[in-house]
Image (cartoon, rainbow, N blue to C red; front, side, top):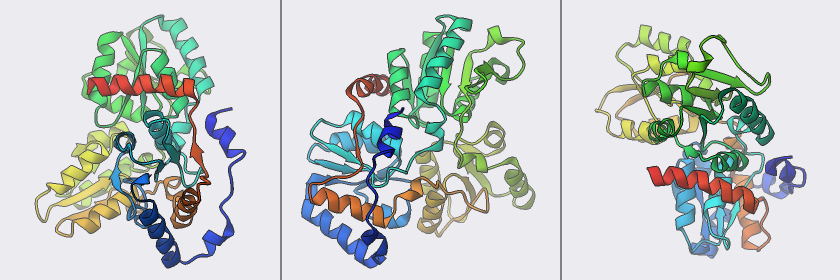
Length: 369
């Protein structure tokens, strides 16, 4: 049983009181607690959070940046992380022992991170090392559980972000002939391809069948072993959307996240991390037209913040991160009031052995970048 599964079996349930309050009453409660606690409280907010939550964030950013900012904030006794479970775990790994990391709603998970659990990864390692010997170094996207980060740390590997993936993959392939890239196959494939590795030298490992998918010929030449995982948000940006944009508005720039599929990334004008997307829009010429392929809340925020640009979503239906959206005003107000009463709920506690090995993977990455 994973750390998250164990907690979910005994998690407290939000009282009905908070669900019955108006937005105005909840906002007043949140503002009161923030004022009362001052520097003892820190609220990091991920870019994909809803506006109703992000308005209270002390800092906004991607998951690793927020975890690092949490660790740098030595004054805060409580870090109420407005994100998803793996992000709060990373913050708990990096912060000091006197700091407590809180996730307002423990149901705020990540489907991608959940696609690689520890037992599956151990089994994959046995299968792949029996085939390839000591020629593999594991890497994991930071969008993974603490247990997967710990596995990678123990086996000499490192974490990656969408911003530094090229640098870390290049480093890893200088250490050994092959990499095992967890848990997002698309970021791994797009990164390796950008580094000049042909698709024929990549294979997807399926934890269900415990086998490499595709043509079994040429397996000796494989250099990139991709875990069969993906982001449910970014897979919703498809080639049909790109083709329609190209046909109807050939002058619109298409800008996507590298968690999108390889064909979508190749067909787009630009691809990069969340911070890359934000910066690209920040420096875009007045009047330019953009279609962005990433999470809905961020796209809407970019549209509202840049009225001088013509911005749409690559998928016109928009694509929300449903688990991220579980963090809402009632859960945030509940978590903060419990903290103010010194009765915190939804505390993230990564076991010491897992945290230690997970920190190795994070520190190897940070030392390289």
